[in-house]
Image (tube, rainbow, N blue to C red):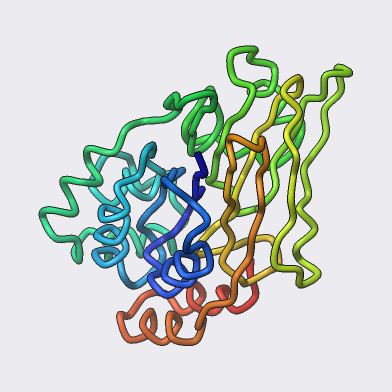
Length: 249
């Protein structure tokens, strides 16, 4: 089985369409690590597109929760909070119900786990090895896909009882990077953000997991950033949220 791993789409339809086109024919099912909406200009279109993909496994993100009133906006910075309020006003009732029903992570798949933040807290950012060690030390979870940080890569606990970060090395312009999984190691795999990367690479990020071959392929793809930015400006979303897309941070 081959899985397309998506995370942090953030209502960026152009990025999602580019990812689906790039991944065409390379996956059998979809896994979504949360945050379909927030920041971007197309919350309904993105939610509907993901619904049509019928993800095999998915979890909610903090922006998904906020968009339907399931979390306190005091946790959001003013710009993010402004985008959440705009998103709430745009969502159709059908899409609102879909986001409300998204499960809390982590959720278990066949030999892997799906989370938005960490395995201990769905809203925890795993930005460094120290933060990741608690999740890596949980013996029941040898392979976890997560999002939330918008940084492609992740962390590994090696069978030699040491840990380290995973860096796909794609920021130099490469389109893909492969990681062969060792069944005796533990992995936290972040596919990166489809719709708002924050690792100094503005290209849409995602991953494909080939379960049979025990292989994760990190991928990046260009998309028409300017079109998304223009839609954000026309919608009246905070200009900074549009500007940052061009920089990848």
